[in-house]
Image 1 (cartoon, helix red, strand yellow):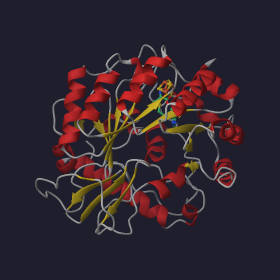
Image 2 (cartoon, protein in one colour):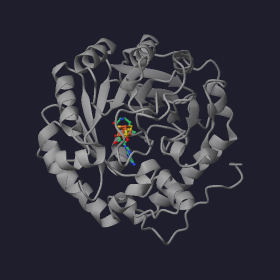
Image 3 (cartoon, protein in one colour):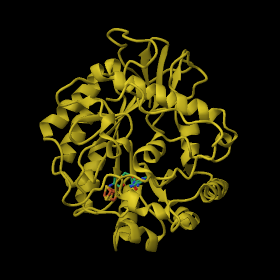
Image 4 (cartoon, helix red, strand yellow):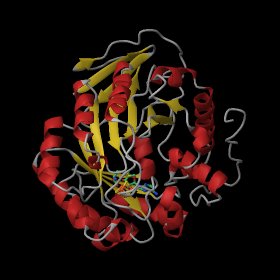
Length: 394
Ligand SMILES: C[S@@+](CC[C@H](N)C(=O)[O-])C[C@H]1O[C@@H](n2cnc3c(N)ncnc32)[C@H](O)[C@@H]1O
Ligand code: SF4
């Protein structure tokens, strides 16, 4: 299904099958759904609202993975009340946000997860789910996901069995694969996420061979030194290792032509917004330009990793504030948008950007500044990195 959301320059054209979107000045195809135009044009340098919200429903999890950037565990906080989560979803829908990616923690550990997602569905939002695939009652979760008609479920597969279980706990690989097969059997589009490390990077061919009959997309990306990930930094890929991993992984596209295989920076280039058709919008970086992150207490952030890196990046709270106020009037968000733009322009001037460089991530830069962790990936040492904390973060 194609969904069109009008904007002052044209609009956002969203494909509910691929979950990808483009900003377009003119429509060359007939959309299935046209959302209402913005009630008033407040600014002409940003979209009227995010296209996508990443919504962490809970920090609690039935696992406690070694690398978890959220530091989730069975003891982590559950998050806001059902009624507050529902209010936030209403705010997103009222602002014409198109899709919500629900994540956690493990959202299926919240007794009300189905009720919250059902509300989102009833409000016309496109919904997808990030999950570890470990369920007390597989049948019950499958029935609920079928009822919800979720657009996509992403299951984490962090290596071949031995390496997945090393990171995620004994027995978790088998359970995740069982869930993945069950989802595919009931016709739900499945994607896998793999966090690459020195232990599991060689497992990519084996992962693809195992999952390819059941999934539409396999996504590989590097481990961020955030949350418990900081303790696993010794397993972080070096620039060369990442480069080779990207080359080898993308070469496997030939072997699995029906599978969409994404390696971190390719996802940025191929999945996100195409700038070709748009005017002068600052949409190079999705964070705070086309997407927003919400934590399980309603906190709004420009990026999900920042939530666990630096609380100075908290933009507001949707339990007490409205999304449109934060989106349009937050000076902090404008400062971060400008910073992302500066990082992006620096990368565009770097010859490495067009090879396999994953250096262009704000969270890696913040890890360098705040956590004193090396960013292995940015080898463009000739050009100074734009300063983060200028005058916009108090
Ligand atoms: C925090 S989890 C929440 C969803 C679910 N519990 C799961 O594990 O899939 C969301 C995604 O972040 C990934 N992740 C966890 N720690 C990470 C880290 N340090 N760096 C990058 N990604 C990480 C997980 O593997 C998963 O794909
Ligand atoms: S990565 Fe996912 S499954 Fe693992 S502890 Fe974190 S939230 Fe739980």
